[in-house]
Length: 340
Image 1 (cartoon, one colour):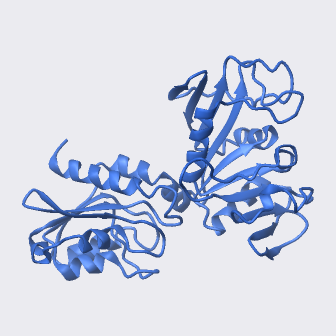
Image 2 (cartoon, one colour):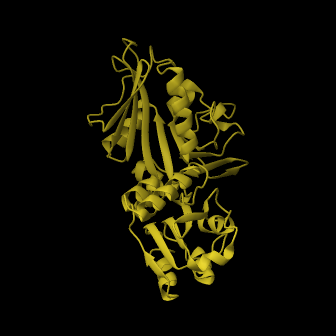
Image 3 (cartoon, one colour):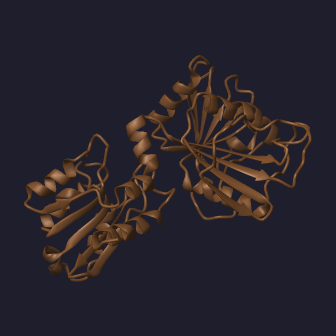
């Protein structure tokens, strides 16, 4: 690993500190180096606040060193006025000696414009350093902007004999260690989705517990609005989007989005894109999960299996024939990870 790669690796480490907190913005880290020494670093904490480059610049004690310094950033500096001014203009204004970029930004408002501003100012700019790692860091952001839909994670827990529950009633399948992992997953992702039957059977709140983090946006697929307003998914702990075929409108933290049943999955993707949802965990139930699997509409799948638990009957786990790229053991539970 060369010097540029080491500093971009540090940018990635910094960026990851804000996982789950920057939506709809990307995760970005930045490091400023003078004569082989880091003199400033920062990352983007949340939407509306300073971008990574500005936080890194602000952390430099001796600003006189900046014209002789290189600024490293995991994603191309922005070139547009949003809630904050363009970082590319700030880099130009301060006259850095060099700019090293991990991955270019495919967002329409940037897409090479940031790098061009920097180069047009006579500053050396290179990109594509640890590019794949930087793209992986922002897989949600890139999927959203390039595929016009959220990054989709399928998730379920099944018994050793392949059931989601016993006698079609809520059943604890995963252990406490895995439950901690599941809540961290919720904290990392932008939204979480369930269908009518799961909401009625389990009455889930779909919030983050036992770990620090922001509650995901809750998405309920309930065409006929069968789920009572007294259920936990409607509580005030998080925003809830309700995809239904009855009504449209907003009531406090609940947003009703009217949609038809034909081509539903693609209408859903369109609705979530318009709501700027960058990632979504599909929690179930079986019918909902199987729809996504059959349509090949997913990016990652996380399957929890309790080999020691035999339920013998109940709701069968989805039909899923892919091969895991990674497995992790949590005592008697095994989590298998899949990529599409």
